[in-house]
Amino acid sequence: MSHIPAELKYVNSHEWLRLEADGTVTIGITDHAQELLGDIVFVELPQVGDELAADATAGVVESVKAASDVYAPIAGEVVAVNDALVDAPELANTEPYGAAWFFRVKPADASVLDGLMTAEQYAKEIGL
Amino acid sequence: MTTKTTPLYESHLAANAKMVDFAGWLMPIHYGSQLKEHDIVRTDAGMFDVSHMCVLDIVGSEAKAFLRFLIANDVEKLSTEGKALYSGMLTPEGTVIDDLIVYLTHYGYRMVVNAGTADKDIAWMLKQAANFDVQIHVRRELAMIAIQGPNAIAKVCKVIHEDWEDAVKALNVFQGFPFGPVEDGWFIARTGYTGEDGLEIMLPSDEAATFWQALLSVGIAPIGLGARDTLRLEAGMNLYGHDMDETISPLAAGMGWTIAWQPAERDFIGRVALEAERAAGVAFKQVGLVLEGRGVLREGQIVEVAGVGQGVITSGTFSPTLKHSVAIARVPAATQDTDTVQVDLRGTLTDVRVVKMPFVRNGKKVFA
Image 1 (cartoon, rainbow over the protein chains, first blue to last red):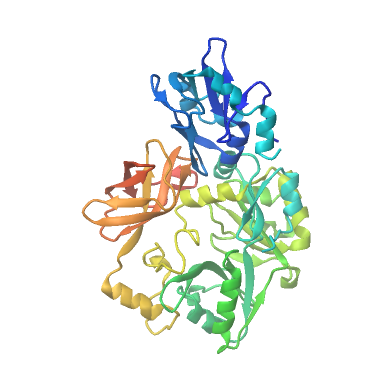
Image 2 (image 1 turned 120 degrees about the vertical axis):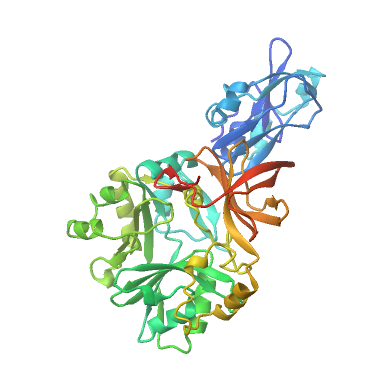
């Protein structure tokens, strides 16, 4: 059964978002996404300073089984990326909401988060 | 289509398998982590439920003559009881209907064919058998478990009938026998599809779950079809429906070594077409590809060989043993084993090395 933390926001391409105290937004892929992908072997991340449009491709996650794009769920400037995840992509399987965050953006408009899915809505979306 | 299950279905669920549809069969893809399972087979011992594969017994006064006509390799090579032979079964046009193993037994021959092709194979064999005194018995009542890895045989010997232990330890590679009376259904062979030592055991379906449990009890881990694929690919072994099928000649699919051209007077299905192809020059050949950087080579990606032409990846994966990607590709025959070629990796033309397969044997890297 996939874990879906109540305090996060979600999009239907299976990324999660967390609004940080400093106004930036941390983004990763959900437990459900990593379960679908299976063993993750490579991760490609955007670069700090990239300006991402909402729904733009922001990276790639490759499992033994398949390659999948990672999307920017909201527009913004990339202010941090998780190099530890590049070195240890398997973290995405074991700690999808913790050590395996993908990148952090300074959102163009933080109020967009309000319109994204809650944990409850995401659970319904993936049929739980 | 109804999804079929093997006698080990409940055993898989009990081991927390993730089940998927494979050629109409509900089979375990992994039991948690494909990478861990792969590693277990390379370093210790793991077991696969391969009961979806189909066992056939071919008997009758003309069983040998029939098989010498039916398949491209020559069962005449099976000089002593127990020996096994790998072969393609071809169309008259010289393409691959299936790949299979055939064993010489004291009662005739035993053949094992792929799950997805079994119905097609049986129909084809029955049609070809019309002119021979031969009977083909489909042994769907048998289950099959492959136990593979450096510790596989030693561990299996802890749980089999004690009277069989010496004979199992004495099995040569690519050799298998019925154990006990044939009608009881046990057959143990030192064969497999992972590049490791190990056994393939056919046994009555109603004994399969108990035997599986016994194998678990001596520390043999269940391994899913996901790891079976990465293991066989590292070992450079073809998979039907990927590296060859009815559109491909065995000469273009790395199966030239399985064609017995001698004696020249042996007529086998596909011979005329293959001889013509060989005389005209085979356009494609099979090679291994190695990507030492990031990314994963995948089936269907186009291979660009500078000055020579294009090929295609027929199987590609991340190699858990080597920690980078490897692939099997069909490329123009003029491609050299030392070439660097390019593959379009998600929009980026990436350099990839051509190497001689296999990639891994007995747990170790083998290509230069």
